[in-house]
Image 1 (tube, rainbow, N blue to C red):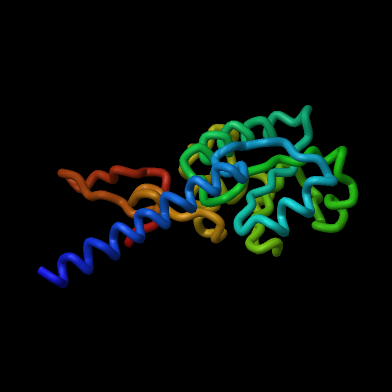
Image 2 (cartoon, rainbow, N blue to C red):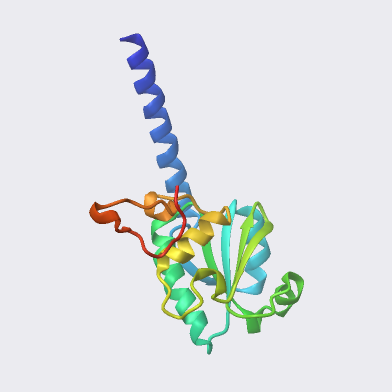
Length: 172
């Protein structure tokens, strides 16, 4: 009984800490997808643990497609801050970070650019790629955690050996 009480208390403490972290993340803007300016970029990236920055141009159709997918992802993953930065209005960071093609997504951890997604090649190559492809790529980049087996890229086997998830060749 003492072991069960100890386990229960530890689990309650974990759940409380997780809830408090989620609440503090929400107050910091996590769970939203907002546009920032060049002056807001550096303070945001250096003071936030996980940041996903999408560099965009307002007239590029593919940038609008990325925006749609990131908006969907940010509502389910509040562990990272999702922002977008207009490439025309941020020439310093475009040059400093070596952004040469749009859309470009750069993933920051503790203010350091760890990974980037340039164009659509890594997430399907076509304009109509599924959101899960981008989610999995962000998870591999180290800024998101998988919420379920589908996001991890694990597949479920159904009768007749049909794949439940046809968008990934990963098997675990």
